[in-house]
Image (cartoon, rainbow, N blue to C red):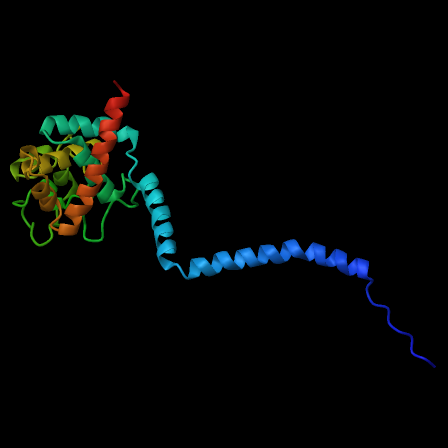
Length: 224
């Protein structure tokens, strides 16, 4: 028996398939070219990633929560320092009080991260080292005790208690500390360094301070 010849695709069908495959082929070629260009241009990738991260950081990290601004301003006016400096410290210390818990591994407490001995006073019995101390809560929040031992804790809201976990007390206390450390005289770098003795910390706070100063000017211009 003669084998039957297997019928192939007609010329018409072949032509139609070729036409359909052309867009797919072109698309694959273009995508391959883009990927190859990107892989061989690391500087372009780095800049793009950096820009995206910068946009994200600016949106989430440098937007001052409006509810804190009146407290910054009031405390800053009392102690003669820029309110934007308080905002910068607040951002660095606890990301505007979003850190949970408001207690560092070394014992710094509250919204503005005070060591207990700095808050109550370094002459308080048992204060040494990093300043964690063994201070009972009733003494730690007592304005009279704080005054006696030369601490920086302040009763910012007038309720008779100076509490580092109270936002007003914490910000007023930070304003008190920064003011007495040089900020009231315009020496911001000295004040920031006294708050946390690290050059990187100084630069980080100043970076946010400068950005917040731009925001302050914009807000004042918008309110005119």
